Structures are given as C-alpha cells and as structure tokens.
Amino acid sequence: MTEPSNTDRKVTSLRELPQSIEPRHDLWPGIEARLGDIRAADGATPAQRRAVRMRWLAAAAMVACVAIGVWVGRGLLPGTAGSGTVAVNTSPPQAVQPPVNAVPHEVYVSDPRYQEQRAALVRDLQARLAALPQPQRDKVTASLQAIEKAKADLEEALGHDPSNALLQELLVNTYQDEMRVLTDVHEASDPGRGI
Figure 1 (cartoon, rainbow, N blue to C red):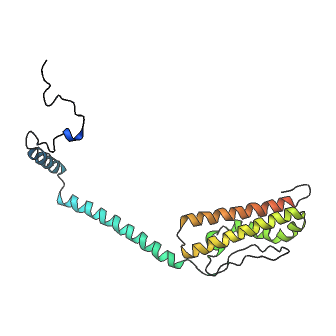
Figure 2 (cartoon, helix red, strand yellow; figure 1 turned 180 degrees about the vertical axis):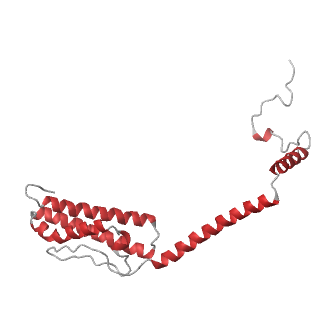
Figure 3 (tube, rainbow, N blue to C red; figure 1 turned 45 degrees about the vertical axis):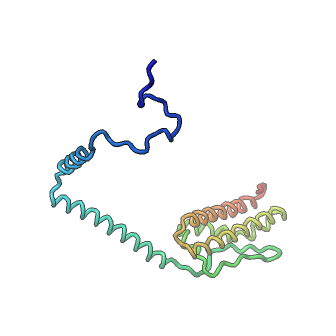
C-alpha cells in the first residue's frame, strides 16, 4: 500500500491547513486585461458621459427639493388649537380637555361628508344616550371617553411629530372607532334594537 499524497489526505482540524497558499501563477495580468475590455466596451463619448452626469445631478436636485418641501411643510402645520371633541354629559362630568399643542381635528379629517355626518351624530348624541338603558349608556359613555382621551393623546403627540406616519394611522383608526360608536348609538336608540 502506498502512503496518500499531501493533497489527498483528509483534514481533521483547521490547524492542519497551511497559513497561506501562493497562486500557481500571477493573476493580475488577467484581471487587468478584463478591466481593459470593460473600458473598451463602454465606449461612451464625453457627451454621453455628461448626459449621464446631468441626469444624476437632476435626480439629486429633485431629492433636495422634496426634502426642503417636507422641511418647510412641517413648519406650516398648525400646532396649537382645539380639536373636534365630542362632549358627553355624564353624571360625574369628566370631559377630556384637548392638550395645548394638539393638532386640530380638521387637519387630518378634511372630508366634508365625514364632518357633516359626524356633526349630525354628535348633535343627536345626548338624546340618543337618554333613550338607552343605564348599563348601555354607561358602556357607551366609557367608550366615548376612552376614544376622546386616545384622540387627545395622539393629537398631542402629532403636535410634537407631525410627520409620524404611525401616529397618523393610529389617529385615523381612532376617528373610525369614534364613528363606529356614534353610529352604533344612533342605531341602538331606535326601538327594538340594542348595542
């Protein structure tokens, strides 16, 4: 039997591997030739290179304009005013006061149909609540107060960071929750229905 050659033997540990391996021949001439082929294949004229450079400059200018627009737009959002809150008269009055630097309700909900429908539901709210049995009235009042507090907290947070998309989405979801409760109260106060 013959002894296995150095290249055929099985390596059982990393320590058995050589520290460095020299290539069999110099690799640089082949790399240099390939780079030269790529440059020759490019064949772009100086005018074409300038056109590409101008496109990149135009793209950079457009990004800069958008960034400046966002920066200026953040400063134009109103930061102080009341919000469109629902006043709920409960036995112990606990109306949530809007925070000082809250963003107005109208900034995020500009659809006139929504505002009209909400205003109509809020106008009827006290009469509709009076038509409900006491346990349901307490439940609805607690829900509306929780929604008002959530709206106030989100509007205050948006007053500090108006471009925060997550806060904006949470605020819109809270408006939708408020509309669901108001609509349910409106429908539940009809005879024969409940919440």
